[in-house]
Length: 328
Image (tube, rainbow, N blue to C red; front, side, top):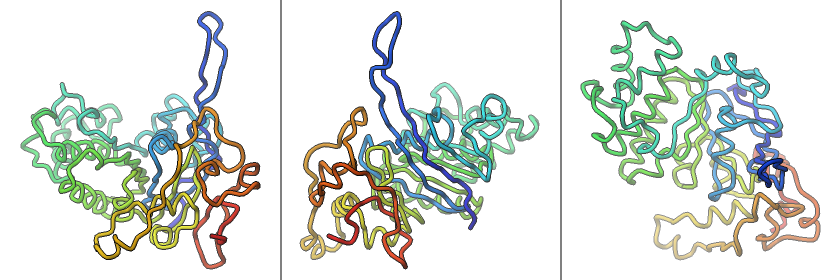
């Protein structure tokens, strides 16, 4: 698989102003602060971390729904950072998003037909005479009966609404999908159906995907590779199976220790790593390693010097941002 999406030193900062008549920048929220990663064609990258770590902001910035403060986002060899206006609109067909809440992401005044037909008309994907046929095809693709295309969102269950959202994302035949916690608002029994649907669509349509979630069990099931975020930075990334079985960064170890074990004996024997305190504010991140105020292994070097992602071993594909890799 070739590298389809490349992100280099991406930053998304939000200035906070004070004053009414002549506002001045009082502070800057560093929501995403120097993130680099790549996603191969046809691959699913799982993006995990605590609430507020910048996962959703990163996903929206990659799709250019938010402005890039600094850095580079390359899609199939083309840097999207400087693109604007009509040229950016042409790239919208290649990048789509599945939002977290299927109840809020669908217009309650639009039928399923209107919801799916609108992007097709705006981007001239199919002739007007073929709209009904294409909407039927999209509904069949996500497991919904076309006879329901004249119904409104409130007439569907949560799982069915999310299928409509997925169909809308697929309408423009994109190459990249960013799925922002697409199953967190659904019942557990429905989550597996949506996850299996996404896996089938990935294989059928050759989709590349960034799957954002705080549920590590879900990410483990669906992702090929994993990236762990903390306070606007990626602290560990690598093959999903390898990271789950042998985490290297203390923060990753703490996250994985919280996953419930299905085996009662293993659950009793497992050791939970409890992090003290709350994550620092992105308004005033700590010096050095951003995780050092909550890390039990932090040294004086950790408090003053930041660490970039680096290989953890000769035969490992994992990269971690920690001064003490292999010492604990």
